[in-house]
Length: 172
Image 1 (cartoon, rainbow, N blue to C red):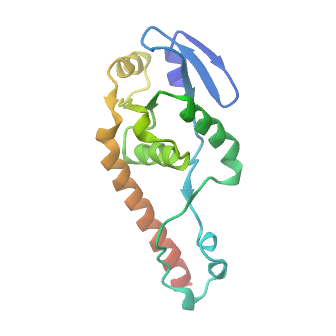
Image 2 (image 1 turned 90 degrees about the vertical axis):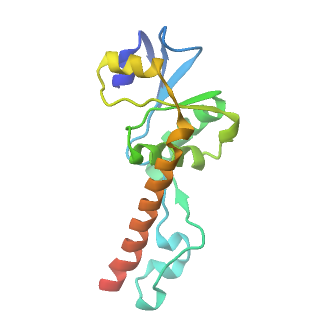
């Protein structure tokens, strides 16, 4: 909401805003998530035997981790995905930290867009004041410089999943 309010003109649409301002080029849309639009799949998505906790199923170490869009977030995810597919330039404007990187890159990966075919920029600000937002949009960064933070955050996410997935049934 703070980003939308910082720009001169905005129109609310279903799941996003159309905005315009002298600091923006061309047609610009601001979309959003609520909570995590993409998350790690639960163990039973790998194999139904994991639905029931059993010591004999441990440890659980998938060869490849599965990410899903929760059912209650599929509508918004589709809106975000459609906008990402149409965009020439994507500006990541999640929180300026590793978790923000994880949220943004996870959505783009789950949307299966060709990241190399897009210009991806990063809004890196620590204030939601109008002047800070506008200054941030005037000084966008190359988003690929922040990709390692996404990798770090995803590694932490997976390690948390492994500890929870294995530790909870083990100690129960």
